[in-house]
Length: 341
Image 1 (cartoon, rainbow, N blue to C red):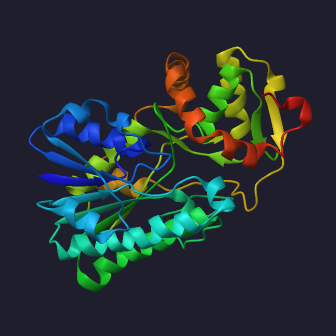
Image 2 (image 1 turned 90 degrees about the horizontal axis):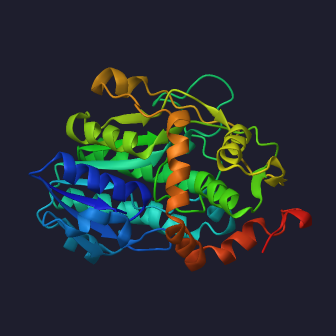
Image 3 (image 1 turned 60 degrees about the vertical axis):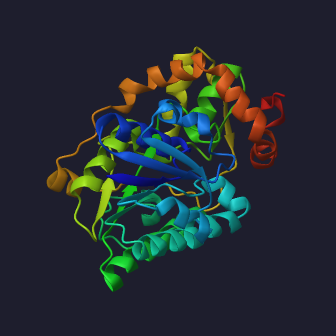
């Protein structure tokens, strides 16, 4: 089988590309990536040296780029997206262009090209904040950020191709991912690298927001099963079993690094900050037999050591694309005595 993976030079996409090449030795992959600030060819690692892999630089919003990538493709896995909530609050336009318009171009072109299966990778944030219980796949969508709203729109666009044309699409909605090579703008790598640097950890509000963390390799294994065995037209939530408050995660990082708790910097909360995400992953367990196998508490020390050992990598990423954004996002929020240049 020949698969097109869009956004394959990003964090989750690059892990998926290497997972598939390792576990499906007869398959080929084409990676299409725009190489924005969050994408880097080097993330693909071993895949770049594989004769079964081809990299194309391109934009899912450009029909010519998409048609070129779709030649001979039997399945599409769409990771291509703008994903950082905080950036969507500063400027929603890139999120609309890629997540909404780009997804429309991609899924429509894939249908016309005769692709046999289209997997759209989405987020649990489309459900909005869940104070009690869990969100099944049938739950109403209630996005609160421009990012979540753009992903909800893309979910509807993909589903519409199934409902109106019978095009075999599947949507997955996953919780917060963690693992190596995640961009330092995200919560865990930001807090880990700041702790290693002795810089403040900017914690929104009181830090009592609750998240469900899943290792990126567990996520890739779930997507593998969904792509091969998931029912066309279905939606599958992907989540681990445990929840963690942000403040508890921040304290665990500081303890593991050996940094003082005085680095905790409680900053003004962001607008519309969802308190808790809680997707119900019972469906994927029942239908496909998948369950997360890498507990957050067990994997966090190894993740911290990865960032400790890969300091040149994260410093390069921060130096290249992070300074101006970080100052704009946190500079006015951090107490003066917490700032460190």
